[in-house]
Image 1 (cartoon, rainbow, N blue to C red):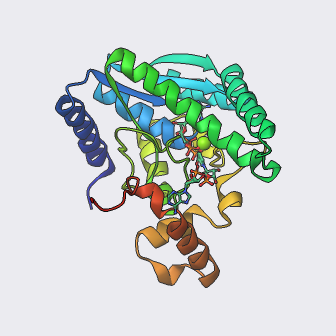
Image 2 (tube, helix red, strand yellow):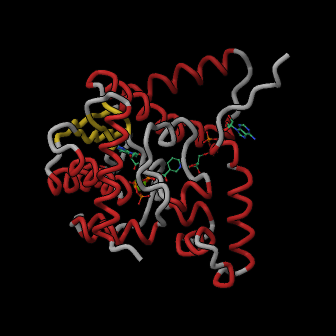
Length: 251
Ligand SMILES: Nc1ncnc2c1ncn2[C@@H]1O[C@H](COP(=O)(O)OP(=O)(O)OC[C@H]2O[C@@H]([n+]3cccc(C(=O)O)c3)[C@H](O)[C@@H]2O)[C@@H](O)[C@H]1O
Ligand SMILES: Nc1ncnc2c1ncn2[C@@H]1O[C@H](COP(=O)(O)OP(=O)(O)OP(=O)(O)O)[C@@H](O)[C@H]1O
Ligand SMILES: [Mg+2]
């Protein structure tokens, strides 16, 4: 098995290669105060010490998330932007809701999830604005467990140019975080998309990252039937997120 430091070095080299191939200047990532973006933030800072940016994007967010994001930023010393996008997200949401209501199309039952996913897509648009301006690539933070279950917003946090940790499990993300020196407050908090009060990944998905990691690594004997079924369903219904948009055959 390859040593973690070697895996980190190889990933950093890979990031440099991809930027070179794309004729771009550097890398940008959204920094949430969670562990996935913390690891990615340290990786891009290593790859491009002077040409990497972390962007904190609060949108009706828990202030603690920003505090934790600053611990990541200060810990790795990356350049950063600290943006509050609450007004922008509220403006889009209100405009769309009013438009739907005016046309008798509004569905109150889906309001919470459409509001939550809009937040992820406003962040994506923001990070791409930074990337366009600086000639950078946008770096995603999905790990193998999130890719497998489709636990991300399509074209939101899933809308990125490179995904350096897509082939490592959540457990490995924690291992890398310790080696990289990520602040323990970030390592110790429960994974959350932070899209609504009290949201945690494991409660929403109804299973655990340990179980998803085990499925990803083919250790099915360690996963109870109930968890296998939940994970198989999440994988099945999110297949479209791992593919490009379908088109009909050529005429
Ligand atoms: N079969 C199909 N073929 C093609 N497209 C299909 C489709 N089924 C749905 N769609 C489209 O996909 C949309 C649903 O997908 P999407 O918009 O992503 O929405 P959805 O998967 O319903 O929600 C996103 C999930 O990801 C979680 N999340 C989001 C952001 C960050 C994180 C995190 O870990 O931090 C987690 C969030 O909590 C929620 O559980 C539908 O509205 C429809 O447009
Ligand atoms: N408040 C925020 N500011 C900047 N970026 C954010 C914010 N919230 C979410 N993001 C972006 O969306 C990504 C997806 O969030 P996700 O919760 O999966 O990762 P995380 O917060 O880094 O780790 P964890 O899964 O442990 O919470 C983040 O990694 C980050 O790039
Ligand atoms: Mg998070």
